[in-house]
Image (tube, rainbow, N blue to C red; front, top):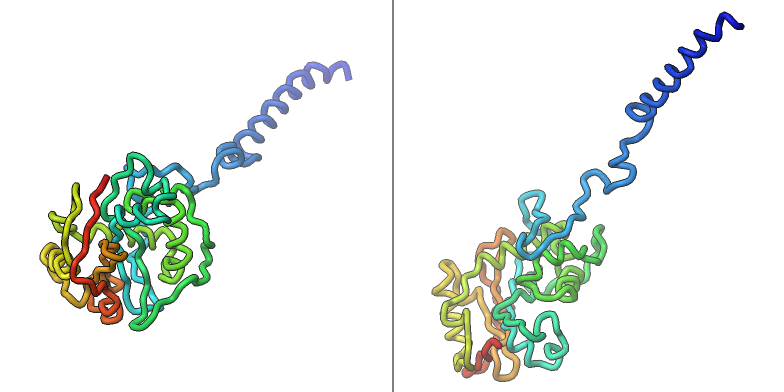
Length: 251
């Protein structure tokens, strides 16, 4: 045993060193995966400046319905309502929104689907909502629109909100209605014709103005699933029937 002592003194530290190397480099999971974010996570913050950082993963075409209605709401009209006065996100001090997206709604030729089941659930992640809040001003609005309408699009949540962005960007607001600093007397026909002139391919039967009493409420534009303009008789029939309207000014 005495003659083996020098050999043992050499072999024991060597065995310890080899074992430590094996556990650090080969025998245990990577520390970055074990203690950090899961591989492939998309939970990084998204700011409005990045618009929609979570982009569509594939060409987007909804299914199970006939067309979309893009509803553009005139924010000063909403903010003058009882509901709007309590909405600080859209109507609070310093908010100067004009046309905002109320929603992108799947439609049948008659009627529309709503509150469909979705494998993605009902809650819109905060990061995704922040990516579109510049055109849909309110976390509550964004969540409601997904639950009631987006869930019926047949699209993943990220694809649906990317499509909302595309639909918004596709429409050109007529210059005379893009920035309003004092009450503007107008009519549904005047607004519709202005949108038609500013958007080649848009026709009278594909756009409708709605009103809240004497005030302009929304402009609704019908689009097919590839976002091309298309007619929509039912939407057009429900347009505002007043001849004189007011477009309230922006703050």
